[in-house]
Image 1 (cartoon, rainbow, N blue to C red):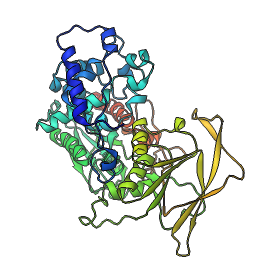
Image 2 (cartoon, helix red, strand yellow; image 1 turned 30 degrees about the vertical axis):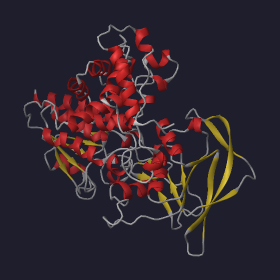
Image 3 (cartoon, rainbow, N blue to C red; image 1 turned 180 degrees about the vertical axis):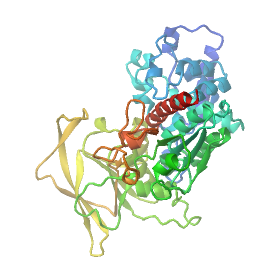
Image 4 (tube, one colour; image 1 turned 90 degrees about the vertical axis):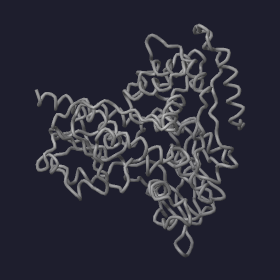
Length: 496
């Protein structure tokens, strides 16, 4: 049930009044109510591209932060891929010191407003939360990301921007390939150490998957731009329209251009298809292309931009991850009257965030569980007109730990649709490996690295989706930080 923002703020204010000035023990904190995120009404939000989640009020942020038990072993920190000191920033937020709270976060992350919105906290920092375990529900753990988002948004709203301390120049140069989450984290940590950093981005706009992959209604692009400005403020140079492997080969950076090290964070932008009949019909898209047209090229702004987007009244999205949710919800906002998500397992096995699934359901998207596409049917003009699907049942767990879907013989059926979006994952682009002598990869073109993030080429590091395959923003950031630590250690050894 949708609850309006004013009601949530009023309830939080009343709760906060009862907490102020008290010495709270663990039992007191256990009964503080979890704060619900204010959202746009579902009937209204499907008609616009504005952000769905509206953010906590100051009162909500403080009440939620008060729920932290301040455990001695702080299991939430070990659950955070970038190692944010979560109890410390929550304690400051609970006290109303939102500036100090954000400063703690920025010790480890340059993207708090982004991570507060899109990171899957429920399977990372919130999963080991002692409060959640005590209440026997990860959904009742401290909403770390929502408090993080509040303190980051407040800084922007007040026109502040704290700049990390940058050490004196070392004279060393580092090249960063790509400008997604892994690259941003690596660039920030390397720059803090005093090294000159240049980011090379293939697109005309930096941000990587944050810009082209995540819809405006989940992550406004102005927020990404603002947080990237933090890099520029530190002195990081960002060069766009620079496709490494074509504009310049990776090897040239070190061999000819005088860079002392390089980091590859070019992501996983090569779409995966199902290889079923009909995937070449007009009206079939990879989620990558569909979302890029809408997000990066703003196809949703009809009449204001020239970017074409395929219009369809009935859309089927194949897949069950966050990208599938993003694609389905985007299709709805682009004018589709009916949108299906076709997924071969059940809701329990879906990799998408619970919040995103719930939002999709609230918006009227129909989930067809235990079903998958077997072929796509077209009309005499080569355009999609239907999807043939087959039913499944769940068998024993597979290598992923999820129960394996087993096809039910004779269960074929026809689903009339005008467009199909394939959202079953991405793989790594082979361009850099193909144009870089000696760079080792696995059979999926993922770059192989050692425990320090170094590739098979001395001085060249890699991290994020180009190493992990399609993963999460915060995992990519953790990879970037690990590589940065290795780069800094390497350059420090060369300087001394």
